Image (tube, rainbow, N blue to C red):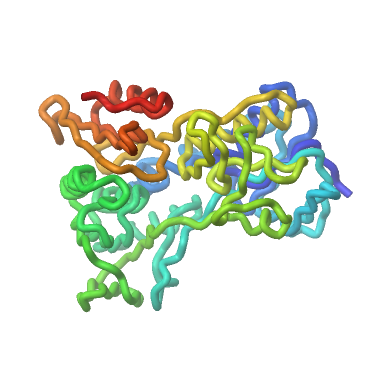
Length: 389
């Protein structure tokens, strides 16, 4: 039986951050990362932007070169899955047939794209992995037109990138304006303007009822002929391994404390697959952002090395739609009111901030061309303060 001090399951930002943090915090044992991905760890944010546009290569999106792992004595086993995790015996069975025993395991399996649940949904491309992005980029090189289904940030980024390549791109979503339900109508109007300025045609208030090769049918009967179809309709957590291992879950996410401990003493979890207690928020928070996965991975790695560290930051991320970058800091679990403030003449030449409140307290801030307000938003959210007058 093979043996390792730290077994990390996954190769996303949470996994790699955990490995690095373990070493930085004095962890000297063997570290083994096991991932189903055939590639070494890579940055996901560029996949829907620079890489899709054809402006960067595989080397550009690599998280680290091979030497980085070698120098830190980190072993990465690609193209391999953990099929069974025994938290009592502290063993993991691999798809290769091997069994690995471990002192500590960190589950950082992330999430996968949620296929669109309509007839013919299998004909739509998805975007999550480097393999997905390469398939999409290759298809875009031969396409004159594209339909992107879903106006989340990945959908908006990908639609703008396809349009930048000269592909006639239509974005279809149920909200009248992009993310109107999530971010409020004022923010949605600005995001719609960003898409318009990027050359994307937005079709709001529409659902997709059927997909055929080369055709998307909407719920009003309209058929859109297209060369390329991308479904960006959300994600599902890769928590099946944790569930079969008997770990506590909440709505498909592994429940962890602020130190990333799961319900099993020997197992930690971090990133998109986790619902982590945040002492600043005073409750469990689910995140789906790169930086939060990095932060939680740092905590998990430190915990595995025996160093006490807590995840107490306000979740936040950046998104770039065409030439426009939005920054968002928020707890992400709802608001009562959303108030937009124009800055420097307003969009597109100036900036804006949307302040989100619940019970009179700031719970989020969305900013454009306004880094001071982004920094302020993090402080107001963390301090449970009211937004500026």
